[in-house]
Length: 367
Image: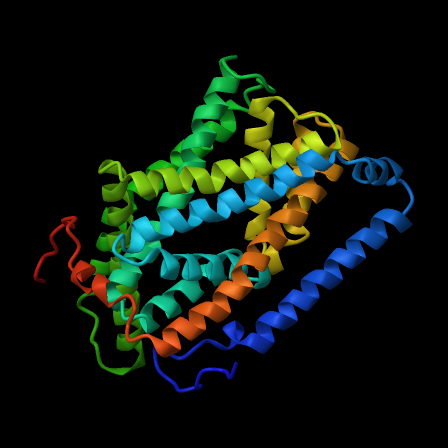
């Protein structure tokens, strides 16, 4: 299929989303996987890891793949419910899976998928202001599931309600830090708007003025997006809440299946806390978080008392599917999405009335 025109403007496809670039990333991922396998079989001291992987339980290996597909579908449900519940499920699937593929293939710490979604939604006819608010809201609601579960599980382990390492530094402290982070996010709209108002009287002429205006608009968009996320959660939107929890929960289940396939599953509290804290390694700007995520997960599980060889085998089995399932689903979805955008007339135009969201945002002074 020919590449879309390279016209400039807000709807032009970014270079990193072009077929040649994405296919190059697929080849790189395959090459990395081959290197990892060669390292496991060639480096000394990894005999136990190799043995665990060679003797992995086939049923639980299949369950890793099934759980990852469930996680991807949860992402799609949360995406559609956050951006536009009137959008067709087929278009929602194409954009959501393409986003997940971008997260697996692009070294952007998860931002590549959101950027692809913004481009696709603009091409599909969704209003820009709505995209900006809802992109922030989508990031917040999917992160909120992790925040809430980490706080609840951390407190439950500390109090002895759930099994796991109950030391305060390994249970209570992560819960408290996460609660403080959630509080800051919740209060951020007022703080961001106050910061934006400080630049209202800067002269709009010249480069400095344009930068100041862009910064103020960006701060307002982020503040509006956080307010939208809070409103969606307060409204108990089933798709948003269920989709976000499924996106996270099935991924945790996939990691648990990785442990079951190669050894013993850790205590529930250890599994959940190790997963949520270890996933911070995905913020390192590497394609699919490869290297950073594995290292962080293995290190955190070792800190929680899990045997290093057992954690290494489980994490490698899990990560193989966590990286490649979204890519296998998302790359074909991306080509289908391009075809849809090239041959359909604004397929997301039905979302235009949502440009003025039903959720009332804080009033701004006229200045």
